[in-house]
Amino acid sequence: MTELKDLFQSADWKKEKHAPVIEASETVKKGEAVAVQVSVGKEIPHPNTTPHHIRWIEVYFHPDGAKFPFQVARVEFTAHGESPDGPDTSSIYTNPSLACSFKTEKPGTIFASSFCNIHGLWQSAKKVEIA
Ligand SMILES: [Fe+2]
Image (cartoon, protein in one colour):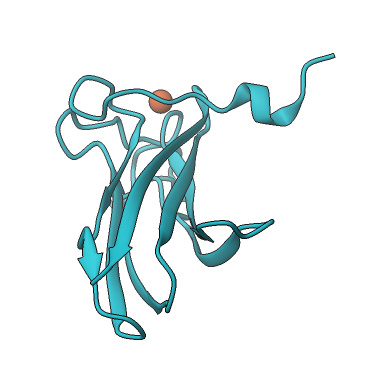
């Protein structure tokens, strides 16, 4: 039986427009805020239309050796051009990007997941070391 985890896709974001791009310092000081930006379509723009768009991005942090990850943020993108006049008529489109920050005293891995309403679930990861 297929499991949900099997449906997450990943790829090089420079070649695949769906792969979330995680931007954060590779090394941070213990207990200092880690600024994180995550976007979809940084290198190759993803469509942002009523029929085809990114619905949400989630950010997790998994400290090295921890049993489970911690959810840091979840952002839903809820304007996709729709209006009472129909699809792609409002000119209002939420860009699929977010900024958040968190503190950690342990090194670990930032994970980002995202969902395209046509092309499914995507994930990426970025290691964070403590100085
Ligand atoms: Fe897509």
